[in-house]
Length: 445
Ligand code: SF4
Image (tube, rainbow, N blue to C red; front, side, top):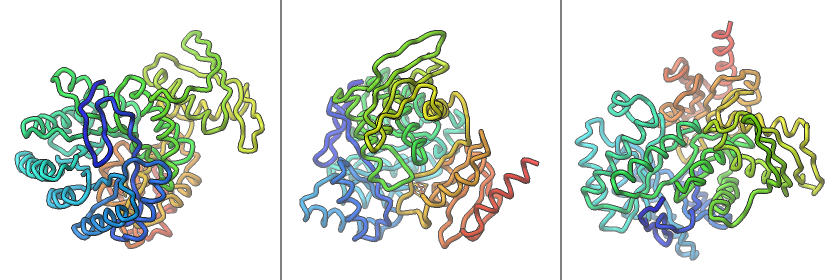
């Protein structure tokens, strides 16, 4: 898909430029030292753009200082301010960094007031050469749109088109759009609808792709690769972020693989493939376990999502970290990888489905450790969707279709949600997983 060029500092998104790899800090932005240190690590790992959360005006000042210190070190990687709800903070941030990410629908409950605030922001962006990302995640669309279209990919597309129409009317073109979801089917459909709608309107804003709240480990990598690759393979997507509930440095090699693969710089290790009765039998000679996971996700994720195939069998081998060949034919490994891919494409659920945000400066507890503990203790709950979210501000909205939610409140307290409803509040962190399990077990009896 041909898109406009969007300038973000020294990086260009869209217009046929290579796919841009970006990530987000999970430090508290106000902790300038820690944030600068993490930005340096992310830059050295290959991040071409780094986002930081900006919950308050103090964080805008911290962001300006982070920008300055990185510049003094000769690091001019563009910084992106992640702003929720406040147009005033977004406007202030637009004066100090290269890009601001917002969901303008959340600026104000009254749509016309939200439009006014968004227009003021676009004027400031024009003046300072700042780019915007309109980021509309599944689950955080707001009542006005979901009352009209439900909480659907169509609603995500319609919401995006409203804001893009306003950008066009304001003659503001330095805009990228994202429609992320943790459900790969919803995510892929939303972006496809938006790409089609923009084409029909004769507009072409670049798209930022991501599977949000993808979790961690193998599942997070496979889910992200399935959703992002399905779109990149169709020529949809100009910049990507792989969100993992881990050290954000770990996101970069996965995103770089996807950027390289769809930038035609590397090829799959698939050596043979047979297709019969909607079952694919694929043979790999992969140089590592991670490479096998990413290759198979890109080779077969879209086919599974689009129901072109129903089953996959893996053959061949990969090299383990000591360089030993591990054979796949009929092995538990092959079964595990296939199960993971089937679940990522939402074709078959062999374990609980986990939704976990990557964490950011709003997270006030050890998210990764807690998420791993929740996974360990709920692994028997096949088919249940369990969310572990870093903050009470965005967590409940963003966990979309989860059956149960563990949401950090700050001050070592946690809220437990049953779908969208908080059923326990202010639970001490130490007890929270026990209480969550008690509730689940009670309901299952
Ligand atoms: S839900 Fe997670 S990633 Fe999103 S703002 Fe809250 S802590 Fe940050």
